[in-house]
Image 1 (cartoon, rainbow, N blue to C red):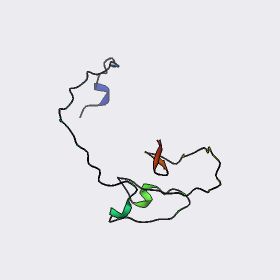
Image 2 (tube, rainbow, N blue to C red):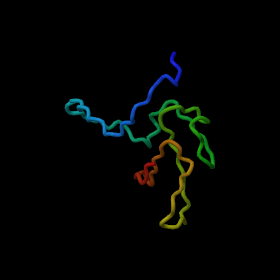
Image 3 (tube, rainbow, N blue to C red):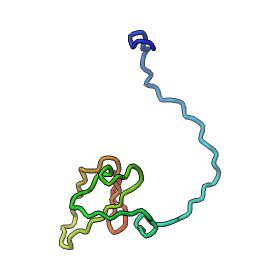
Image 4 (cartoon, one colour):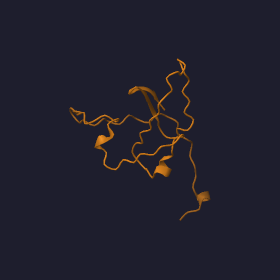
Amino acid sequence: MKAASTYKLGPLDYSTPQQKPKGKYGIVRLEFLFSIFDTSLIDDKVTRISREPIAFEELEVYRGYVLEESKLPKDISDPVILEAPFVRDRGLVFVDRVGIQDR
């Protein structure tokens, strides 16, 4: 193993790398299987009720999706500001099953 001091750093290359050839996959047909809101097909679903979002680690979910649902009061102002400071990796927001935000 060489000590770090024996390596010499050359000038940094900030140029744009060459584009690589794209794969030739032909036609890819997508088939609708089910809606992300249809939980009836999920065998290992667990329902938890919480006033605040629960971290994936606390749910012991290490990959995939967690569906969180909230009911808004009927007398909510329109428009309303949506704040989601707790989203760490990725969050998709739907209102009446229509996507409105991807963060």
